[in-house]
Length: 555
Figure 1 (cartoon, rainbow, N blue to C red):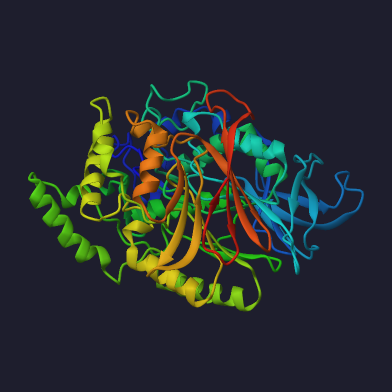
Figure 2: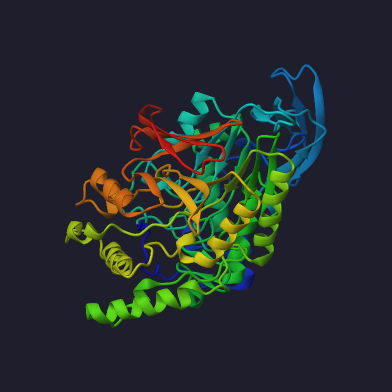
């Protein structure tokens, strides 16, 4: 799989960015400076509705944004009825310009497996929208449903997946697996030709400074479908790369140029700060959530916590012109650097925490162990016939990626070095931990914009299953490989990859994942369009795995 994000270096910012400037409103880009104040603040009072997240059996995190003339103390109330006839929990939290007027607080002492209504109230008596949230179950649990999203690029089209999920109202929890926002400036990704004119992105430039990131979140969070989804269901969210910048890792990123964009550690800190301001999330880099006796959800950080730098197949083949020399270089890499046992994706501390958590979850009687994370774990090589589908109209950066990946596949090397495929030793350690724990491992993944189902194995033993969900709006392989019919590509991919049992590389949408004591089912919900606002579906595909089988049934 080849992500079609642009890889050309961005234009030099209009202003020099210093460490001090990155963290100040005054350090914003020239495009932001030209944006009217009303657009930057999105008005006054409650500007972006409400949201909730980080659920447990007895607590949930509540979020809102309130723009005032100074720091303002907001009261929050939680009730079992929408009229708030009986307030069963309440508290106070400050909305401050230091946090971009975002405010969040935990409601605690709640009952398990219960829907609640909540609201915020300002000192003048004005109230926020009324939100709805839910606590996680405790003890025996017969069913739990999660709407799973990823890759929501504002400029490519409308967030109809969010709209459908909110209208369907058939999930207990939303999961967002990353790329909730994108960092690019207007005309980059999407290009001017690809962009939907009605979806005007602010700021116009790539986001680098604190105020840039804040305005980008404000733009996304004003979308009515996203706003409604947050209003009616709690969310567990993880960041992927575009919440900071493309192909990020712990010490850098492909789309970060220190000479013009400052120190990476500063930009990374800015990205983390704004994400935690604008999202109903805790400050913990990774965490687990217990769904009764049915499942343990493990929210992972595969990006910024411990990831070593991605391998670059293009650089490996740079200057190599003969096929024999290319295969020799790739074979040396395959048997050497590629399998380095020291390479990390999670980092040693998170990896140990996950291994201990898998074992504890099973010993405590939980049926499913679910990885809520970003990138595909299944092994994937490009089909051998893909080069025949390359066209002269394909963007140059996509062509380079496809050629490098296809050459690597001939040498037995996977296509996507940015996924778990680029960190085989780290993947094997996780799968080994799952086998040692006798886990029913279910891996959820986003990132690629397409739909996938893998049966995972470790040294020939079934180790788990993976459902990879389609993107909300970001384009998939049907755009990168337009000369190859998507059905043909999917068929070839399944036949030439032992772990892959199903693929869809042409549709946008989301997953509804249902867990029961005996089965895990992913319903791939494909939206009819993203070019106009609509909640109509184009189709549904169901994939299911029986607990203990480590296999997937396609229906």
